[in-house]
Amino acid sequence: MQRQTKKRRLMQHIRMSNKTDDIILLISLARISFLNLTEKLNLLKKLDSYNDLAILSIEDIKNITSRNIRAVWDGRQNLLAARKEAAILEAKKIKYLLYGDEGYPALLKETPNAPFMLFYTGDASCLTGRTVSVVGTRRIAPEAKRAAVQFAYDAACDGCTVVSGLAKGVDGAAHTGAVNARFDSFEDIVSAEGRTAAVLPCGIDTVVPSGHKALAEQIVRTGGCIVSEYVPGTPAENWRFVQRNRIVAALSPATVIIQAPDGSGALITAQYALDYSRDVVFHKAAFSRNAEDVRSLVKAQLEKDFAAGNVSKGKIENTCEKYIEAGAPIIGNYKEYCDCMTALPGTYSLKNEQLNLF
Image (cartoon, rainbow, N blue to C red; front, side):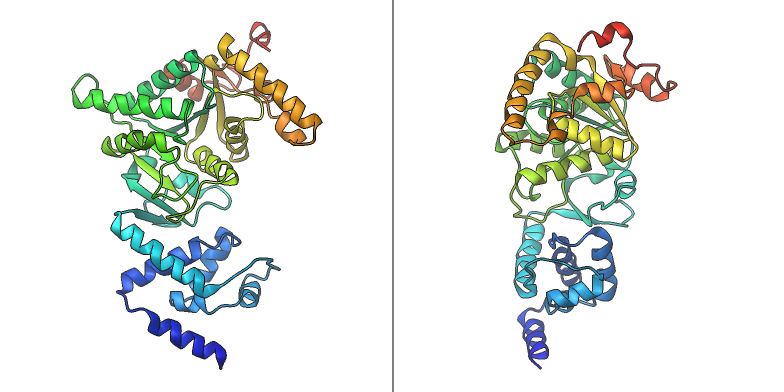
């Protein structure tokens, strides 16, 4: 009886169009962090409206998913939040793709626990063509900055979309290179069809870091897109940066590491790429003297943190050598990257003299 009364109150609470109701239901599911993709899709099949989800108890959800879920759940509060977030989507003209939609990136769809929804601004069709992910450290060396800009510029000129995370350092340089190619194409200096896409570790209504707001606007203005798996209003937290990295790796057949100290987020992205059976490629700028100086400083701090029990063994062992010794190639420019992608395995692997870099 109490459950029926609650349901009646919720159904009387709001009157909206069917389209808006559908969006609210999707957002209500997307924002449930303790459910995986398969569970959300199964729930979507079973529910007729967002009200059906709002009246479920945590025990109901446990029974539907056949899993012992330990989580705090308030369906009514979830619904109220979803309504606010749906209003933000409409007000800011934020679009979305649902897993299984025609425009949902095929490479991302292949990966385990892909996002249930992708929220975006700009043109997400750039993620359905040729892509390359470019990542690296925020503590960027001069050689790495030049390399990131030039590589992305050349990739965009070749019609390839450059995917990165909009962070300071390598990410920002890569986005800038691709944007510059598009601006030059507008002036008929080059013919650039490629664009760039930035994946956020927060809600799509916020740009992180805030200093890259202008760059984000340029990305959209030049035909690219800003994407996020998180509903509007979601703050950037450390663990969400790692989750963001998995999407960056998933959106391309290869991830190019421009510069990456031991244990860095860029190498986490590299590990995701390998987990997804994608290629990992290193740019030679990662081994310049300045880059090695940064790497040495970070390594020394990591060793202190490890000795103090503040970082895991896995983090300290996630090094460039790990991937190079496994056969990851080193390239010097975009042309070599293209050759590498069509060459026989091992063609661009490090030679003995290159191993002296380590």
